[in-house]
Every structure is written in C-alpha cells, then in structure tokens.
Amino acid sequence: MSRLLAAVLILLVPTMAWAVPVWPPMDTPTFVAKSKDVLIVRCINPDVLGGGKPDGLTLVGPDGLTLVEVEVVVVVKGDRKAGKTRLGTIGQPMEAGKRYLMASFGGNVFDTGFVAQSDQALVEMPAAFDLKSLAGKTAVQQVQAIFDARRAQVERLLQQLQREKKTLDRTMPKPNANK
Image (tube, rainbow, N blue to C red; front, side, top):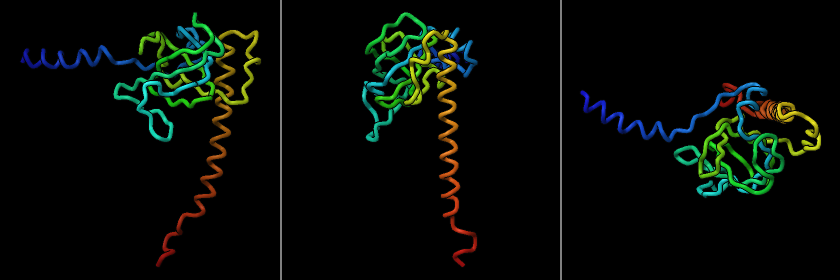
C-alpha cells in the first residue's frame, strides 16, 4: 500500500508543481491591490510560439499557457516600461491590433515575469476608449473606468445579439409544418 501511495505522489507532485493558479474574479480595489503589474497594451502577436488556428484564433497548449507579444502603452501599476515586450497568459483570446488591460498577480511563465492568471486579468478595451480620460486618476479609478467601458460594450453587444437571435428564431420551422 505504501508503494502505491509513493507511486501516486511521484506522478502527482510534478503536475501540481507546474500548475498555474487561476485567480477568481474580485472587486476592483482588491484586484488592483493584489496585482503586481497592471498594464494597458496593444496586442502585436497573440500567439508568439505558433500553434494558432488558421482563422487566427489562439490555440491553447496543453498547459493552457500562451506567450503574447504586446506594446505596453500605459503602465497603471508596476515597474515595467512602455514599449514592446512579451507576456504570458493562461490562454485568454487576444487579437492583433486591439488594446487590452492586462494584470499579473506575480508568477513567471516563458521567462516574462508576468502571467495574466484570470479572465479579469485580460480585458479587451473598447476601440473608442480615450486613454487621455485616465489622466490624473488613481490606479483603482483607471481600472474601474476600463472595466465600466468594457461592461457597457458587452451589454451593447448582447443587445445586438439578442435582436439577431430574435430575427433568426422566426426562421425556425413550425411544429407539424412538414405533415
């Protein structure tokens, strides 16, 4: 029995040691306080290591980690500098040319010293969002403004999709129509 337990531990310990913890959603002040780095970036390459699908979407590796190349546009929190860099994510989708809020709670993947470890740690910014509107605001206020702008954008997108669904629902065959 002890040999079986030892064998199981030998197999599981390396897996647990390499696992990347995923952070749960949290309120904005807690999010900023726990973050080591909070950045506003423009995505250059959403899948540096390749393996992406032909449609340009990121194909997440078996470990869920993706190396992305970005241009840091604004450093909201942390010691990073503006300019091109590579960062690690847990496979959240990104698209070249779009801007994102990215945060890391610490950790190091791909020797970047950065890993976006939750869906909240990688949030697309609306294209019309004016970065100048963040001037003079605290880090919490800046992040909240971005979260609020994205939430409003998502609500508009949901309304559009609901209208489209309602239209398409009218095309469904009626029961007993083929009898």
